[in-house]
Length: 337
Image 1 (cartoon, helix red, strand yellow):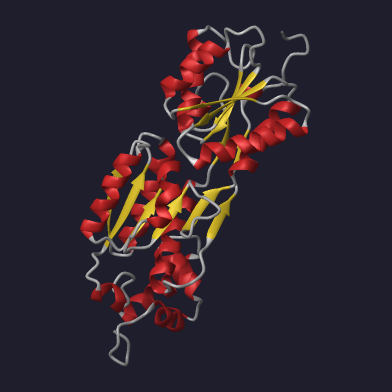
Image 2 (tube, rainbow, N blue to C red):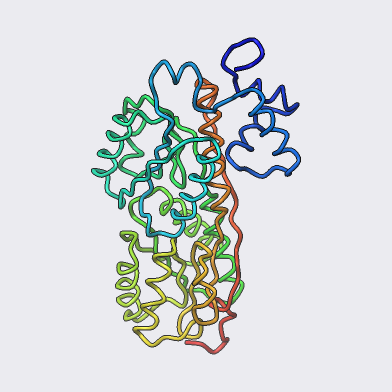
């Protein structure tokens, strides 16, 4: 309650702390602010008695103090890291998290969306398949949704995504500068992420007069391994692979080991997600590092802002990736086959 006896709002906290509403949202979602500013906002939260999830509208609709989180594959280290960031931010706000793993299955997504309705969650953070994303706007959901990793230009929900086309183009540019020309790509076939990374790859290849050669696969390491083994048996086999996730990256490494191809002399490799193991394989793997902590925190910030101002315009945050160059893409020998 504030001094007038009314339920405190995020604007009351901002006024008490002498900061903007956006800054309060960043603090509540554990976003990047100075320690002094964080303390000032947290003191104002305590002084006003503000609870992010206890707005009068939510109380009247009997929503719980729970955030839903549906990811496509919890075995994918990217989603593990993002889930941790979301849970940390929810904990700071006094909320619980219901975590569901869809395994890239639209039927499971439908089941979990019904579960979220039954649990009367406060809001949902969601990494949907392309099939579910295409119809998400038609669903009658009584909670706000923030999309992570996956998005569509026509979607009406807030979203936090990587600049996927640019990130994939960075890998093409790097490999081209290292002397590689036959650069193949493996991309996930269930999400908009794989399609966007393919578009960046295709555009960068075409801009350099190179012929794109891509295959779309189910997002599993075994699928990537099998695809690479088959591809490397062809006469005009690739000199390098760009892959769109860390599971594919693992599959390519397994295929190289199976075929007794050294990295990078026998096959150059580059992909996404700077997982700890990627610097331990051979000479280290060149990867795009995604800002996973920022993705999770930003998703929570957008959700808090949507709860406070349900009718505000949709926001789409596009974050940049960083190319971490390692030995798996060392310069190609001039006399290599």
